[in-house]
Image 1 (cartoon, rainbow, N blue to C red):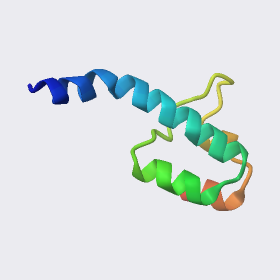
Image 2: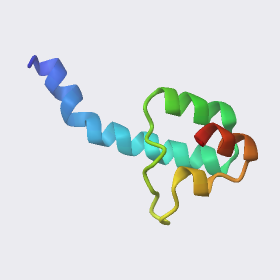
Image 3: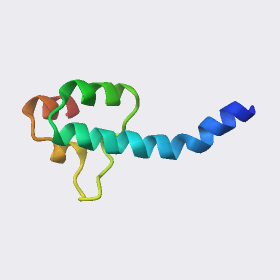
Length: 69
């Protein structure tokens, strides 16, 4: 593995954690475009937040809930 690839591999959990926090923020703010973009980037919609809610449960917008189904 090249040093650059190793750096990306080592940072993967941090990147996933950040994308999850961003996803939960976008969900709670009803930002449909941001939710779509984060899902395309690989955000894990099944992961639960610190409040124990999944992305679907945290979403208040019906359009976002439809996207997460």
